[in-house]
Amino acid sequence: MRSIFISRDLPLHSLFRRKLEDEGWTVHAQSLINIVPIRFTVPARPFQWVFFSSSHGADLFLHNYEGPKDFKVGVVGTATAEVVRTHGIIPDFVGESGDMLEVAHQLKDAVGDETVLFAGAEHGSERVKSHLSGEQKMQLSVYRTEPDMAAEIPDTDVVYLTSPSNAKAYLARHRTDNRKFSAIGTTTADYLKEHGVKEVSIPKTPQQKHVLRLLLSL
Image 1 (cartoon, one colour):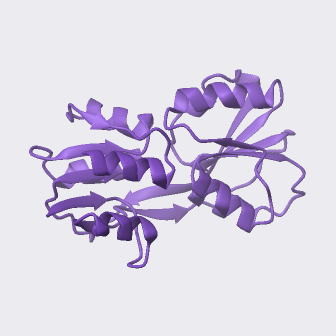
Image 2: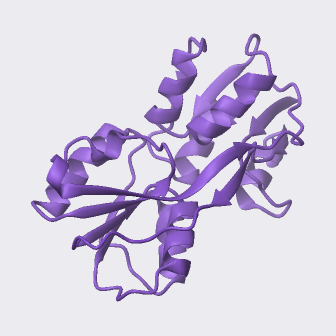
């Protein structure tokens, strides 16, 4: 029986978990980080878009923002898009690729010359912003991540890491030999490679069907 560690909390009834278990996998799923909200003040400078690269950023911003929601919304991934919809907003742009430079290029095409407010993690990745000019982009930190030192990390055959901060927490406490690594996208994969993991597989997109297809092929 094969085993996998996934750095995301998955309930026992999760379809994603059940499909892996149906294929004979033992699944250990737990986030390795805690999300710490940051009190924020939205910049006075006008913006036409708000962009979220994570569901945490989307939920925290939209729950606490009290101004008019007359902006367009861009997101990375269908999971973040679903969180935005729970706030009664339909995203105008959904980047579905695991390659953040590809998402950056698509976002540039979508926003044109309009200004984008990036609401997300403190010290988050700069890749999605990379194709926009300095005048077009503003950063707003709405949360920071801290390692969850109480999280247990078992030995598994496969490790699937869902963010650079989860990757950092994993590498700080666990050896990397004799196991296969997969990452949700290029940003997380590059962090792993920069810190000694030689081979990292990436799904076509972060959608569950593509992640499952990749993991079951390892």
